[in-house]
Structures are given as C-alpha cells and as structure tokens.
Amino acid sequence: MNKEPLAWNPGHYDTNFAFVSQLGQNTFDRLQPAKGECILDLGCGTGDLTARIAAEGAETVGYDASPDMIAEARRKFPHLAFEVADGHTFRGRGDFDAVFSNAALHWMTRPEAVVRNVADALRPGGRFVAEFGGKGNVGSIVSAILQVFPDAKERFPWYFPSIGEYAQLLERTGFRVLTAEHFDRPTPLEGGDHAIAVWMKMFGGVFTDSLSEDEAERAAASMTALLRPYLFDASSGQWIADYKRIRIVAVKES
Ligand code: BEZ
Image 1 (cartoon, rainbow, N blue to C red):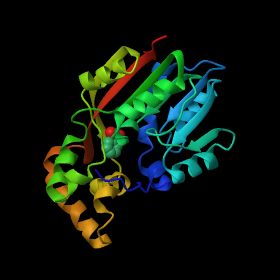
Image 2: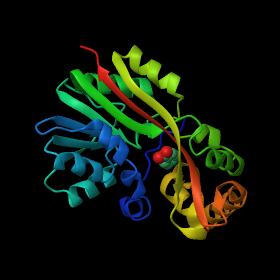
Image 3: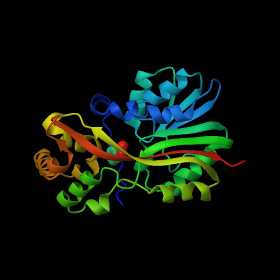
C-alpha cells in the first residue's frame, strides 16, 4: 500500500468538483444538526459542508489530513475552526454529539482505526452520519486504471467496502446501525472531452506522480479511450462516472 501523502489542489477541487459537497446535501439532511450541538466534520475538504452545519447553529470543527485543504477552508470560512488531522490517528475525547463525513472515508485505508477514533470522539448516544464510496464505486475507472498503470494494485489508495462489511465493522466497534444504504449515483463530470484527465488530475495523483506531464497526458488519453463506451453519453455529450455510495447513520451505544 502506498503511503505517500496526497497532494490535494484546493482550487482545482472547488472549480471542478463542487458537486462533491453539493451531492452531500442528502447526507447533511440525515445529520439534522441542532443549535448548540458540537459536531466534527471528518475529511472536511475546503469546508463547504462544515459551514452549512455551522449555519444551523451547531459548534463545528473540520478535520482534514491535507494542509492545503485546511488552509483553503480557513481562508473561505475564517470564523470557523479547522485543523489538520488524520482520521487514522486523531484522538477524540468523547464529547462530540455527532461526527459527519462526506466523500472522505474511502481515502482512509485502515477503517478499523478510523471507526475506533470516531467512536472515541463521540459521547454515548452520539451519532455517526457518513457517505463515501462503496463496493464497485467508480468500477469502470478503477478497471481502466488497472489496465493503464502496471503497478496500480500496489498503489491503490481507496477503500470501497460492501455494506455488510461496513455495518459489521460499526457493530463490532460499539455502534447501533440505524440505516445503511448502498446506491448507484451516476455523477456527471466536468471537463468535456478532458473529463477523465481532469478527474485523474484531482484524484489519481498516486498513479501519475512519478510520470512526466506528457506521460500523464498519454495515460489519461488511454483511459479516455477505454472508458468512452461505458461512461460517455453520446446523446447529451456528457461523461457520467459510475459512483456507488454507502450512506450510514449509526449511534454510539451507551
Ligand atoms: C468518490 O467520491 O467516490 C471518489 C472520489 C475520488 C476517487 C475515488 C472515489
């Protein structure tokens, strides 16, 4: 497993991937933040959903492992608290009413440690509300990556569990799972003909970092050719990625 830190580009993220937080709205709705609650946003990115939670009157803190993402979150929302912290290693004190996470947990490849830390961060009865990539997520893109990058398996940076696997992990760690869903969420991509290159630039750095710009472009062109029959909708001229999400609501047993 590759352990190099990911170099996130917050500007590129907010320009081309605003949908990540926009599509997090349904998960936000499950959270139902209340005034005065203390809520941790784990993997907060550039802070848009943290700000939406705070706007409901909750006290928030956003954690993200990327210093660049946290710097951008602080710039956008200077009145809110953000910290560079990794889901695998942060230490909770059992005082959060809820932990929220959107589109982040699939980047954390040691889920036992993460779920343990979430449990430790929550008060008894506190809730864990999360959405992330489930089994089969971006399956076509993963398949193209495996074909184009010979060492992709060793560098694979994502955790996409089945719902049974994840619900069991939650139960083993002291949660009661209230709802668990695993659903298709076809996701239109920005970038027109360059959609796959744009996606790889944002999320596939672990596969391309050792390549020259030319090599990375050629790899993206090979992936585009492989993926066109599966992800390009000719009638609308739109690339649509095959996202599959897990959404859970769980409470820490008293
Ligand atoms: C996701 O949000 O599901 C995702 C994003 C980037 C890479 C892999 C999955």
